[in-house]
Image 1 (cartoon, each protein chain N blue to C red):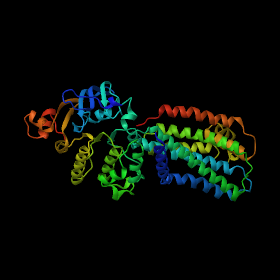
Image 2 (cartoon, rainbow over the protein chains, first blue to last red):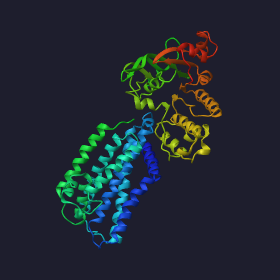
Image 3 (cartoon, rainbow over the protein chains, first blue to last red):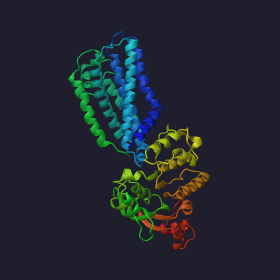
Image 4 (cartoon, one colour):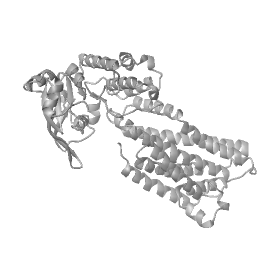
Length: 236
Length: 253
């Protein structure tokens, strides 16, 4: 595919994403939670920001991305594209990059608001943060890709996303702080991609050196589920 | 590169744009196409007609490289539609049944985007003008009427400046005046040197437009001829009656 086609596709897909109300929600919901609950927590709290970051990635990975991809297949957009010189895989690649950009923007906004307005620590190890964030996003996107692969249409993808979001968010300690959850449930949560992500992010803000287990859990989900998605994905 | 376009038809001495020989295709044990052979020449409008389930769409999907036949050979513009897919797609324009575009995409965005996919596209603003879409350029696809959307899909099939276009049920959903207008535009496309394959279940459309037509029934070729000769051959005056005689059923439900 030529550079101009890639550029055009990226431009057009970004415009479409900006016209999608779902994209706005992935910014607004975690920001709303951060502001509403952040006000009542003391300055320097290290739990709320990691929770909202995990929520923002989960919203993109479980709703926005799979719904978009499944709709593209359902409506024959991928099929139409496959009759042009462009590979339909390129639109998937462009979509994944853009969805990742949405997650990163939302994350930047949350960190900025938490640091400036809520006094979250700015003294975090940026390299560890980027590594944890990349790994967490990869593992959650892999879950989203499996949804996109198995969902027959956009509505089904959306429904599966909702069904998965609530248990995953609960196990991850995003509905209740882990301190208020039964230990067994917390333990189970550490073996889910979202739970491992929240836990690793929390480590970043409490200034501890990163634990190995959550990183391994995320990497395992990222690899295994990406392979499953690639195996199950249908172009039409 | 020279032998790209050399599928020569010895009888006619005219270049074969499409050469399908003895193709067979079944889905889950159901025979969709059985030993189908057709040749489409440069510059003609070639009709594909038949009742629902006759195999029309399967045949064109094989020509477009969207499906592989179980047996038989297919050459389109001298290329194999499966293994030379990307190269063939540079010269092939397609309007598919049951495909949509993102609803929030604007008319001009879709044309400019699709033009960017090709190495030597047509000027998309000209195509937009030709197909009467300029006044709709900023409109979102989800807000277009059926006829406007259909015109856009045909325009998108032509924006890559193809040698061959395949139009599948292009007048479905159009009102009579929009249909007439579309048919005259298809003639203009052909007059511009583009070979057209037209899948239709409207007899008048086939009769008015096509130089030759293949009649498919239950996956088999029943006849290939000019619409007039086809009617004459079975001793009928209209294509409609000829079709009924050939297949034992009515084309339009």
